Image (cartoon, rainbow, N blue to C red; front, side):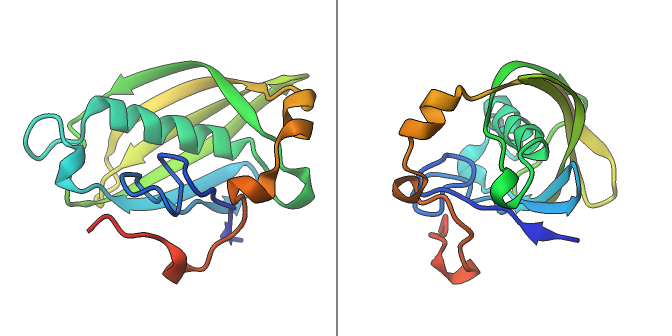
Length: 162
C-alpha cells in the first residue's frame, strides 16, 4: 500500500517548514499501520551519539497517533491522553531508524495504539503504548487545514535540517 500521509507546515515532527523540526514523512503501509524512516541528526542528542529521550518520545507519540488517523476524507485527528514509553536501548543519532505505529482498539471517542523504533538490524530500541482521544468536533470545524498547510508535499518542498 505505502500511501503517503499529509504533513503540516510547523509541526515539530512532520512540519515541512519547521526550521528545527524532524521533517518526518509518514506512510500508511497497510490499514492501521504507519511507518517512517529517519536519520536523527546529532543536534537532537542528549548524550553524545544518543537521541534525547524527549525526541524519542515525540517520534513514538506521532507515529502512534498517525496509526489511528486513517487516510483520505476519513482522517481522524486525535490528542494523546497517555503515552507509556519503554526505552529499551539507546537510540543512536546518525543512523537509519524505522518508526512503526499500529492502531489498536477503538472505543467511541478514544482509541489505543502501539509504536516502536527499530534500528537497521530490526532490533527494537524504544516502544510505547498510547491512549488517544478525538479532537473535539468544534475544534476541527474552527481549524483551517489549508492554513495549517495540511496536505501531501512533494519531497523537494521539505526544508532540510542541514
